[in-house]
Length: 159
Image (cartoon, rainbow, N blue to C red; front, side):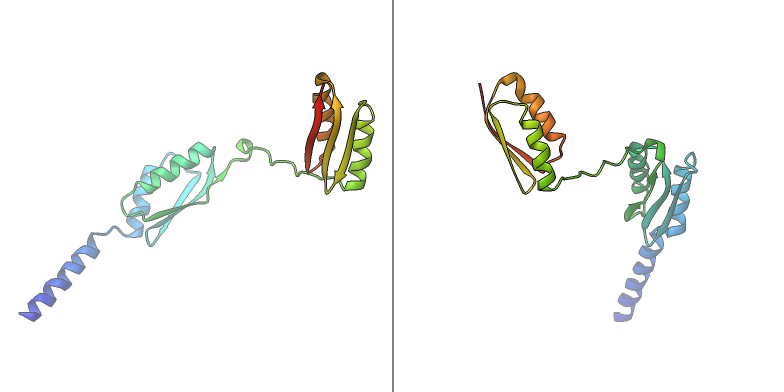
């Protein structure tokens, strides 16, 4: 009786393992799904699908991943698909923060044009104090921001 139970258990294990799709079968199904996207390649190892190639845009990239993920037997997806250069957004320009002494000189050149306004610079932070007319505030703030301080602390009183 014990032997029959062991034999039955082994048979069930073999049956379950044989039902699971193998990597080659999963790749075949994915290839058939993506037949109109030759710029995309997908490899499968232990149920992990890796997408490589060039995607037209971010939406296309997400749709490819969703399509691959929906295939039976795919456990997880690694999407290394790169975006086509023409569709990538330009890299953000690096923010340059001026050293205090340069910033201080530049700030005072700007502030001198505004009566009743004074400024201090400490650690890249410009602190504005004094009084200013409402219509002069925006041009002043814009001019100060163009000097690229870490921060502008506006303590001005608007007249």
